[in-house]
Length: 362
Image 1 (cartoon, helix red, strand yellow):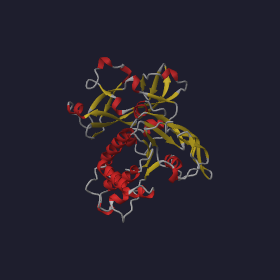
Image 2: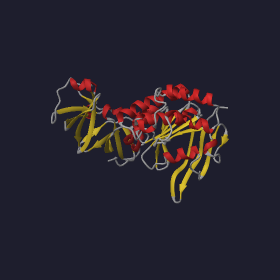
Image 3: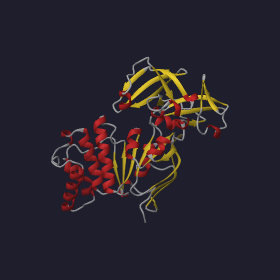
Image 4: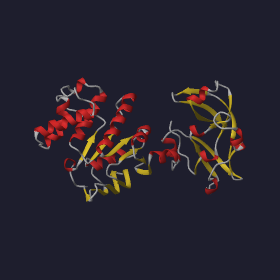
């Protein structure tokens, strides 16, 4: 029987506060799953219920075909890595990694072999006799990973394990975690509020808001087809236009845009979202003869932000600040500066259409 983890009608209440509201999910063996959402959405509460550290209000958690609601954390086949490394300061790197194995009364020879294996896997060979205070934050987090993996858990749960680290170390450790997951073919459940982290790591992402699952899909699906305006805003960046349906188009101030699938929506007021990289610059990234004329607008360049691989240009459209992203190589071809005029093209199929608008994050 495959070691599938199933959440069935799972809820958690803290008094009158509903932290998790009747969620359902099947996590396949060997899958890398990310719970992604803003602070207070219930993602860590779900992780704590899976580990057994949080009592379930209603519903069931199945693992390997059995309900594990009442099994204590120590008896579950799960490893846990917390946001704080929680290393023992008076133990060396080797002793920290060996801790769970000693608790399981494993023979010393096997402990030594497993610790050496973890040190090699995590690039910590040569550091085995060092104490946590002698290590960098990234190294400490690797030791915490090694300690959790040493017991060979069937499922590894990680609660924002990289949030205390600086950006470059986070990116390096993301690669380490992804490689480990693929090499060990282990089920990983990862909690984060960092959308870039979730998209980079996960096979599937669960978007949470107010204790509920709002969308479940691959990183590609979540980014390319956000189901709600909240997701379009929370994952990546979107420009929003609120308009009125008129003669098969969307009237936005003095402009009228053609938007694909607009006929599917009965509401008179609609909200359009478009990613900055999907807006074209006429005669630079798209030729004018390939444009729907009503979707071409001339704007003033307000701010130019160089972001490395891309250049983000801010502009105003009918009083709304918006952004268009250009690959740095394309930007090099045009000598653009503040207050220059550019013609932008909004392709009809680049719009996502919503009947509600999530208040933009500030």
